[in-house]
Length: 85
Picture 1 (cartoon, one colour):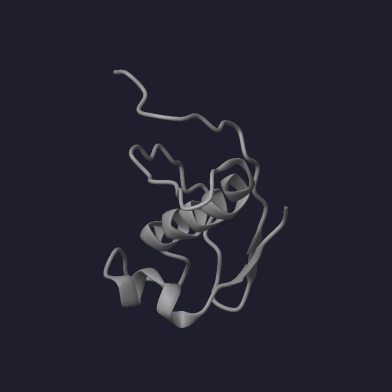
Picture 2 (cartoon, rainbow, N blue to C red):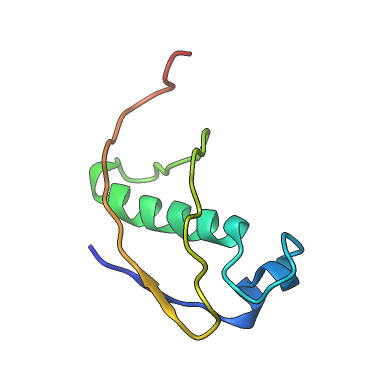
């Protein structure tokens, strides 16, 4: 699956309040990741079930300017229940 997000001003770190340059904010990058994870996992879930995020460990390595497109996703794991600590 490939999903494309067009980075708009409302996705910027300036608007979100997480920085002072007009690039994709890390909080919105994470929201995009969770959106794609839900869509990728949906075919493995029983009807009426959904996904929840419980841990995020990311490195935001490259700025993505307003007007650029962001794409690429890989589903690594699907599991039922809660992972133990």
